[in-house]
Image (cartoon, rainbow, N blue to C red; front, side, top):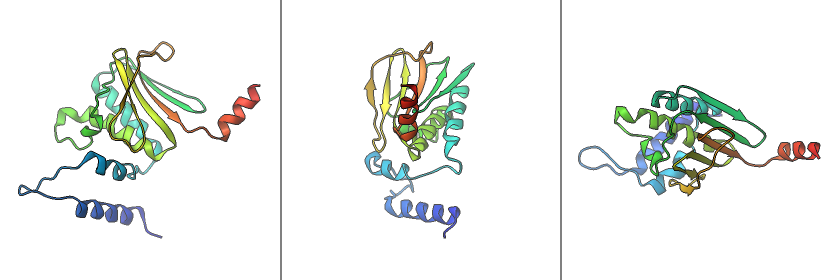
Amino acid sequence: MPTGSTNSRDRVAQLVTEAAADSSGCFTLDPQAFWPKACQLRMAEPYHYLRCIFRGLVVLGAQWVHLAVDADDVYVCSDIDIPSVDNLMGYLFSPDPSAWPLQQLATGIQTAWNLPYRWIDVVSPAGGRRYFPRQPYPTPVPNRRHEDYDYFIHLKRQPGWNVVERWLKKQ
């Protein structure tokens, strides 16, 4: 059975051979081609994506971050406007040091796709964006609140038997 490091090296080698370099040694990625490959990348601990989201929010200036979890939802609420830019995934490999907080948010959202989520919303009073698995560009979502919070990230899990069981127990 191959180890994680061997698998990672093989994956990186495959990605490198598929990219075309220009004369300066730099290359660009087509977002449509990159997205399916990026969704296959995993963190050593799957739930570390929350660390990236928390880290990005704190560096952006959050005074507090609230985490709420139920059977099929994860909410990360904050006291700051969470950027819901259309090209958030474009920050994954940004060389600009000032983009690091957005890079952390993008990394957290991108790595959450290795878990069974249906969609991820990034919402603020100005509106929001919904990210779907295997789609690099988000779709707009209307402004809404979660409890008393205006700024939040909502990760919607796939329905499973545990959700059905809890619902039936309530009946």
